[in-house]
Image (tube, rainbow, N blue to C red):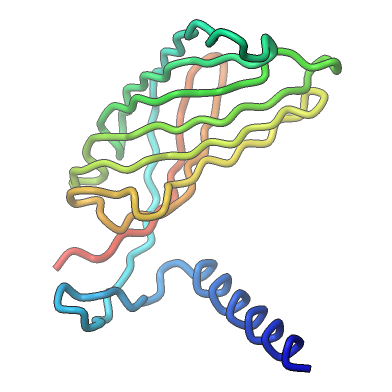
Length: 176
């Protein structure tokens, strides 16, 4: 019985955490510098623009699976986000089914987002299943620095006729 109650309490705590994370734009409690807590208003915003990307294949490490590829990432962003990023990608170079594969990547973005300068890290997880793509790009929690401290959000990449663009839905603490 005690084990069931503990499980229910953990489940309820998990659900509450998920609901809080899924409700951007509402005030959240953040620790203040002196150990106390203070209400901080979080603002939801949208940014869009274009970017150029350069992917550079990296030599495989000795003894690694030949089906895995590594690349460095260099990007230049324009529009609501003006800046650059550098990162690395690990991808499956081949599968037994044509049109299937996947990649993961991490990149640090540095620049100005609608007048606020700083940096943050984007985490990519992409899957291609028999030609059908799925991609998730999110801001790594607590990776924001400078005036972008506290940023969270999702980054959508679009490719049309070889041109790259982005839509970025994000939240940031309101500036005082």
